Length: 214
Image (cartoon, rainbow, N blue to C red; front, side, top):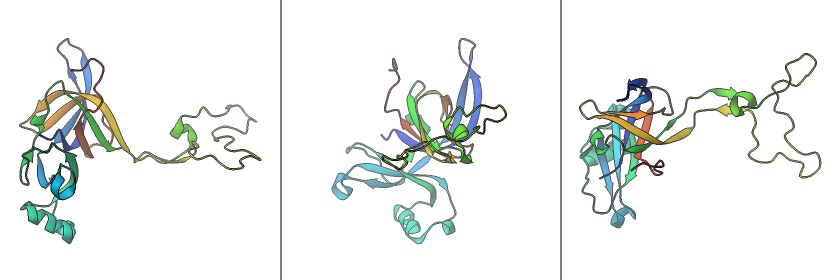
């Protein structure tokens, strides 16, 4: 069985635990996802499944994609992603992957695209302290010295400078699954998830288990 699926971030809220304390959680609409293609070691060199999530009009797909979905006998999907599976997996095109592959207490890694903040300076982007705020300083929010005068006479790669902030692929690891609602295709995870409400996310079984997790 594949331990991953596609979903959509619905938003954050809070729920009350058994001890009466409230915890921050994120609601994810995960699936149902449809297997579009099965890749095997004999034909592709590795074992994986390609799953799709979210319906889209046929006219919004390219001609090669329309043929790809028609070959599997499926309607076009908005998102496609691959997940590795074992070589003895029985998943085939047309099968559905639902939220019941996860259980309460599992730990998952959630990947999404962070919110874009536009062009930002070093104070907002990299948390620089900045210069004195008094009059006459002439150094307030500038990055400061960024290179050398003689040797090597260039700006070193990776220097923290102003630039585009956000709009990057972010993965939040080891989020605990608090609740699974198979009827509504919902996964409730403890903590925050990257991206805006309504954004596509990828939910996978956690690679690095938290300390003490089973």
